Length: 74
Image (cartoon, rainbow, N blue to C red; front, side, top):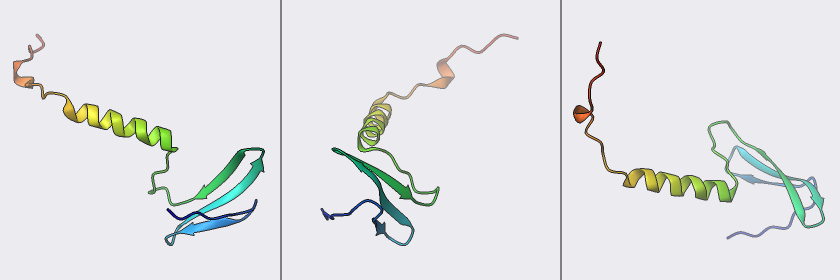
């Protein structure tokens, strides 16, 4: 893990097209601005973890044989 110190207004560049900038520091909270292409998915860590768990659960579901479902009348 790379650990950097940045002051308000300073940023870091990831790759060729992602910039993370320190927007504001207030007490123990740091506000970050992220400039990235729309194709780059950005989530807070806790949300990314929830998505990962939901995807794992969905992958474990048993397949349903749609041929066995009753057909609508009419």
